[in-house]
Amino acid sequence: MSSTILAIELAYWQQTGLRALLGIVAVLLPAGTLVYLFLFKMMSFMQSRLGPMEAGPYGSLQLLAEVGKFLQKEDLIPAAADRVVFKLAPFVVLISTFLLVLVIPAGPDLWFIDIDTGIFLALAVSSISVIGILMAGWASANKYSLIGGLRAAGQLVAYELPLVLAVMGVVIQAGTLNVQGIVMAQASGEIFGWGGIGNPFILTQFVGFAIFLVAVQAELTQPPFDMPVAESELVTGYLTEYSGLRFLMFFIGEFATAGIFSALAATMFLGGWYVPGLDPTDNLFNVIGPLVLIGKMVLVAFLIFWFRFTYPRFREDQLQQLAWKFLIPLSLVNIVATGVLKVVF
Amino acid sequence: MSTSALFAATGGFDPLTGGEVMVAQNIAFAIMAVTMLVSAVRMVTTRNVVHAALYLVIVLAGAAGTFILLGAEFVGVTQVLVYIGAIIVLFLFGIMLTKGSFGDDDDVDGERRSMAAMVGALVLAVMAAALVDTFRDAELSRAQPSLTADVGDLIFSQYIVPFEAISVLLLAALIGAIVVARGD
Image (cartoon, rainbow over all chains, first blue to last red; front, side, top):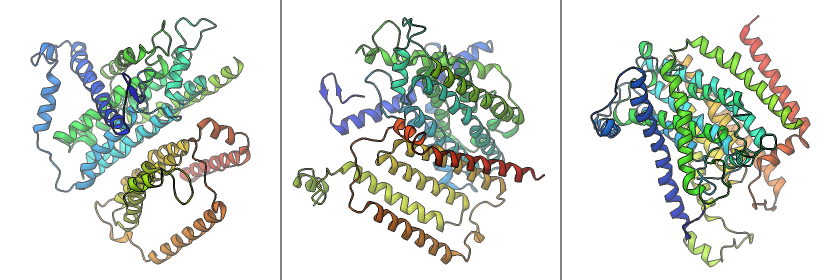
């Protein structure tokens, strides 16, 4: 975000307040959109039912009813639990989500922080949520929770590697870690001398895009990678003892992270806030940029949730083998190939 | 005198060094330093192993924040990714897999307390002496944060030999760990 809006110069505290407010919107808006569009409606249609229909037109106000329900519930804490750690765990998960949203630009002048290490920072803070999940699993003093927490940690550590390595190809091609720089590299890129649509990296980094989506799916502990919350074995894993507001925080954290990772994938592989045909420095993008980004985010999230509702759960050993024996070697080959081609061309 | 009054009285310049006073940075550093100090003490005095690991998270996050305050973005972010995202997670993973009891552990606090305090004091003395001797009165440049590209350039040109040596060392440790774990 630049320091002037509509030619009004903002003081530091005003900028900070505005950033905090927009940060909350940027976390809650994708979470709500994804829950309604995909979890409520798309899953229902795929299972030949209507989903929520009563609250508001087509059940669109169902979310508010759900939030109200969670807020009214009692905040239960097991007698044997480690109370402080138990209470803090959902906050740690949310901190990770809120830090993640900071690096995504929504227009040439619309950004929270424009730092040199951009995408690297996003990947680093996304790993903080593992600690929150381990805290939740351990502090619940419940063996199902502990097993769930341990499974989650093992899975998240394994899939963080392909996630980071998949991004590396994009970074090599763009020549920068800065997210705004990656968007600009795609907007001003050319395909064999033809610059009509820029050069969205999904064309050259399709392998990286596929690996990134699989790794994101695993990072979100969604089906088919939902061993940590496998309800037929572990009740709901590390979430078992949580109720009311704290459960809601984990829930928002999961879907907000899904939205933000989708936005990140859209930024790195689909050109972010840029649409072809306009100059990337055009002021118009400060207005339509957020809408374009949300559109692309919903597109990527559609793929993620499509997989979620389609495939059955992996076994634990299959899950680890997929990461270590297939995705990591493949992403390393992708990096080498990208590096060689970058030097050749 | 309040900080802002001092700032106004000196025209925004440090009366000792003549450099620009960075009020926000100083406040941020003070908050982080106190938090880190308290967490570090709690980490070695708590009898709950998991709590100790969690206090270590706060200390390491503070270290990452300090790096970022100094303009060393890349080092700060690497600190978060490697130490908080990987090493602490492995700590917690190991503790939770092996520890049977829940809550405080009475055998955590050993008789080696004085020995540990001595080692700590010694490390502090050596580090302080080395740092003071190296920098003396020199004022570090705070013009711009260091760029990741510059860090990469330096590692792969001037410091290529130490970098490769560390890479080989890490690889050796990795292979060694696998050999020990397999046990054949």
